[in-house]
Length: 360
Image (cartoon, rainbow, N blue to C red; front, side, top):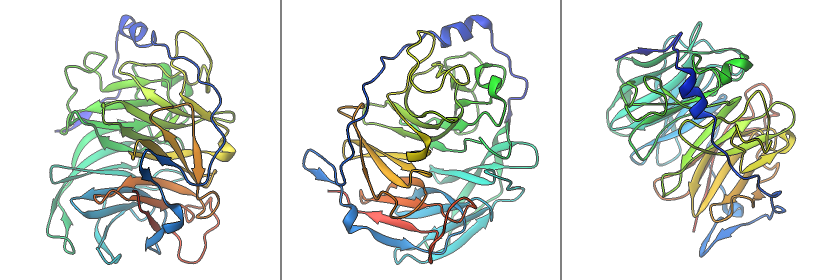
């Protein structure tokens, strides 16, 4: 089923309801520490292991059972990773037109299907593909468009997709250069969307008939849920503050009216903010009682304990270069995806790569 949302309009009353949420401003984050632990579970960056090398501008990691799948932004390839770390092309997503930050972006796996967010000629879209074959011989079927008409540009495409504990598909959409669109419920620019696996609008979405779950975002690129079902999202700021947000249904996160903590009753403040030079947060993952945030310009993994969202620590600072994604593997380890070959990094021999870090 195809869902196209161009020109969608919601009522002013719903918009007003969506911006009336408030969060308390946090205190500044705690100083970083090189190795962090939560209870008896430890993260050991010194035990990192390179799983894959030689990737071209990779963007996202998703697991189908125990098999890892990767997306490459500019080649539009879906790549399968074997247990031995060997790579194999599963397929190429047709119609992808990479430009700037656009291309094949986030991927997710749900009930035997692969979902992919990509940039086409004049839009971003989410497509679904049946996955078939055993590990080592996986294939993708014909595309079925789930979401279309998402704003696209050379930058601020958002692009992260993930299935929540409610079984719904969530997608981050950047403002694509349309700053004011982030505050307009008739535009999908600058939003986090929530739809069913086949692209329909859930009846319990915060705005009737709309896929919009939250608004006022600039370029969100990370989604993850804790065990209680709370949704967290990372977001690129403009020049002043990048953000980590707790996402509420119908919540308004302020862009472009505010950036970072504003302490205004009509917008929800981030629980943490960082200057872009040490952050530029992309993918996030939750395990071991913490949120792990992959940072591009900051070239580090930031760890935020769920027990204190005001605190944080850092590891692998400037040791792997730009980091695009972090995911929790079926064995509980963290998998990190470097992003040094995207035209903005300084690639080393072997870049880009997947790095595994044991947990516990």
